[in-house]
Image (cartoon, rainbow, N blue to C red):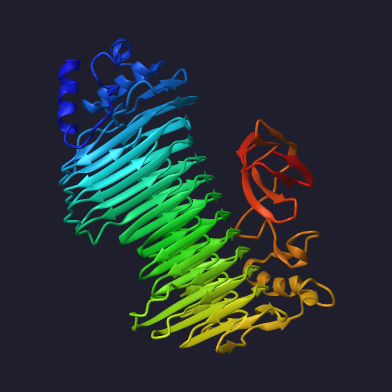
Length: 622
């Protein structure tokens, strides 16, 4: 029976998967299914070695879903001896197998996971790749895939209506959950197609999961993710989407996830979407951090330090990675979210998010460009956020370009169609074009490039603003283009350059902004209290160069009170022992806020880059 099962599976995969000579774990003699027969029909199955884990793949691929059952890993597993065949797949867009139970990793590590797929002659087929191919209403938790693992997809010819979904833990999920999962494996997708009809081909990759819906909590990605698509003949619609945690998600709650890996999305003939946490998100993201650098290049580019394209709420998220983007046509880039599309209820917001990473963009034609420290384009509210990263935008000179173009560049938002409130920018904003024959208009502002509808209020800027174009440029300490601006302030000694200066906003000396003979924090709080019934602004010694900062506990947005019993470093991890749940602010030795951590009662462990941190007035070295 086992031989028959694997013969069927191999026939399905043989047209699309090519493996090295050391074979598959699912080859006869490489697996052991005795655990399944001896424990069936138990509600809980235990796996203790690689041969038994390989048999799990065969059982799932034969149609057994483990619904309402648990599979428990009892030991670390070394899979380096053979190549892994993903459990569950889809051919002709018809699902063949999925995992619907609970996979309990018990804190164990999977080592040497190797998946290498060379896809040829693929037609009308979606391939799901990962430890699990498909997860449907299942849970994967408390598991690590280590750095000796690697997933490589090489897709090279005759593609038609094809999709590839890749994640270390699963290629795709339907209403699934991933809890306390860590990926250290590198993920690579490469395509150089000889021929492609290319009407509906997409490449989606994430460190934890490729695409899907459900819940992702306390997950970490440390592996680099690269999706690089080149086409030699015809392919005008080959979008790539990648994120440190997931490629695309829908109706998903994402809590306390961190990415350390570098993210690269390249698709010269189509769209490239890249995010530090997620590529495309329609869920709620809370307490997530990106440390990895993000690079994207394509005809149309959307990049975000947390998410490239989003519609849900963003709460207390941080980007510290460098963002580099190159596009031929449109480009939306933000330190938190690239394109923040209008939510259906009009109530979505970004709140208590901050960008610390530099943003460098090079659009070829300056056509439809929106770049901001928090959001590139936003149709939703941006509240209580700040940007510390410099923004640099330079196009590539093209003498053949003669159409009109517009670029909106801002310290908080590039193009805004809603409200920016209680925000500040400390980074410089610079946008220049050398297209002498092109009608390029640049709008550059310390807070927003242009506010097409909505307003900027109760915010301040201390960064230089530069807008240079042979045709038209508009620049201002607060906004560049014509915008509704109130109760906002900028440092009068900053450099503002452009053909047309927008003087909206109130100039103050640096000393006034720092509270000497003029309490800017108190003035900002006067209006903030009208909205939140609380003081949101304050001065802190040795932080933010003396300028006002947003408090750690703005009313009706976040509650961050907790009591720390002990804070220390152990084996490269930050350990916080707390008497009750709350949020903890982490600062660097210069006093700049690094991140805000969600702390549970008891002992908490966090992954942070090596360095010296100030936490609860205590100095901790990792």
